[in-house]
Length: 336
Ligand code: TRP
Image (cartoon, rainbow, N blue to C red; front, top):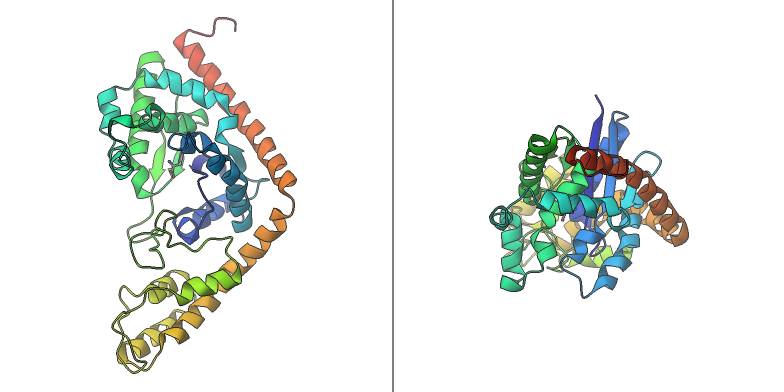
């Protein structure tokens, strides 16, 4: 059976190794299966819900995110890559869905709740931000997505979408498809930052980006948090919570060698610089080719924008079909 898969990213910055581990590499794998039809959305409309005064930050990153997509191997011939704001049908669907959801229900969304606290919005939370989970329900249902691969923090969005689908279908008739969330397995899909403080994130400034040069990547690895008590080479060192070993576990392919290095480090006599050099080699093996592809694509931004335009047109045709069914079911397709 065919899977329709929809997922996306807010274009508020370049994508980093955390995105790669948490979602990008999985998308590329899913793309290999001819039964999977992927829609990958650059969620600029959603990014604007808390960047309204700074639209340049969002618009300038659309191309950056597209470059990251292409560099890791998302293929516009097999997957539809598109820009959310270019599909007005999504905004239109949102208007109808909003009427099926109470303010109280929106207020209970735990992810939005903690984001409002984090950003210290209080009562001045932008209304568009407050209701972005409903807009996300439009993103998902417009394509009749069956699977939505996302991070753990997106669970409430999936639940809210499922409720919108149930309510819509119950009220107006069976039009929408209930999606399933696909979440990372326990302990997977969450890469800590190079400082070891929580997950890799732009706001924490602890990321390695797909676009980082070999030089910057090496510098970042050299500054990685290891074991603060491992001062002299001879000192026994700790592997747990040591970012170099954490990253080796995630990206290394020679598991035997990594086990040996851990053993040596624990017993003492293995310096941080040595293991960091090894990690740089490991990361270069995986991300060197990605960086090279990204640089190639970046030479021709017009071609990338053209690809996004074509993807957006394809996506719009699908969304328009769903919107037409929605209006038909609601009895507001007056001129059809
Ligand atoms: N909220 C998602 C994030 O921050 C991005 C997103 C927008 C999305 N619309 C979506 C993800 C629809 C999946 C489906 O990562």
